[in-house]
Image 1 (spheres, chains in turn blue, red, brown, green):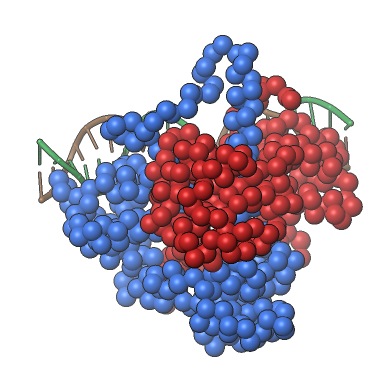
Image 2: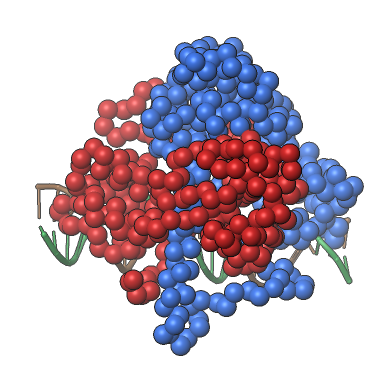
Length: 248
Length: 248
DNA sequence: GACTGTGAAACAGTTCACAGCT
DNA sequence: AGCTGTGAACTGTTTCACAGTC
């Protein structure tokens, strides 16, 4: 529809867009028609300047002195994210996680529909998972073509992930969400996003470990400059909010 | 044990540490005793300079002219990540995802043990999930204290996530892995990492959308500088690898 | 000769601060 | 008066390139 005369958007901005989208949906549900960058920021857990800069990459959707129109902004973000049309996805690996994702309805309302679930274990083929029936992984390429699958979701054990990714790629899939704890080796035009729960836990553990070390060494050291005293209670006005980290 | 005379480590480095750890484990399994930054980099899907810089934050664990000793490096990273001791975790919300995580054994071998699963639905209490029995969410604070839980994993529906987080925080938990699609509002000393599958899918969708737009506009434009022709096959020497993005 | 460790350069992302619109 | 949009300053991260060590 629109001409591709668009600026280059920072990755960090792109990663926040879905969050803004969610916040705006909530505002819409609350019948709010206007939102200032300040309000959106508070809700999204970022600062107002960031919201304004992020949104400005796409155009001037706000009104000075007023704010952003919730409905309008929602439409624009929706368009940018391609949430106006459907994204057929396939899940490879019907283990605990794959099945959980297949059953989970929360994506379909945002345009992501799981059109097939495959597994390599013949014993599992035919089993019902949510609305779908597990098919054999042999049929993966076929299914991708048949349903015009655009996004592949890999939830296999790590040893099987590369092969799944290769099959998906050869069938034309260019976007992969990889839950397997492996680094996939794919052509440069394939976009892979890794979600690894163990990695996340280890990052948390690292910080816990440091906290413990800091506390231990605070016994001798006089200067309390290193470790702040734990924020006793949320302040009245500006809420001191948790350190946040999302997939980039 | 060691004095807290440690440098400040960039977040980006911390996020890669678990990946190096995984690669080293694999090398160890393959009986390799030495690894160069180049080899580690290839395996981890990053470049060699990054590996060297990352590791150098922790000390000089390599030998010039030789590389890094796999076993030694593994011990050091393990220590940094606190994988030498156990991290008791609790899962709040025994839905599809919560149950899948509870059943999944893949964390325990890295020191993360799920010591309890709670849910707010009385009908689910008593149900077996993996090795554990679902308990009522009322008991959450109690369970945290009893098992000295350090990490809380929130897998509730979004509406219930804030309350779960508050309870965890009040019981002393300072690290939260949040799967609920909500921005949690917590004291600044609580570290939250968000994992949101819908967000990940939307990021992939954004890029797909742009690809489609670029292709559409490429009809008129002569310069093929914007979109590279799809890498036909993995090159012999240096592998051109997929764009990668992990939780930061 | 090979490979690490690291300053310095380049790049990316965030925050500031204010001009400009309504 | 209020709030957006954005250059400019700043902070964080990656990459380069090479001196230093084995």
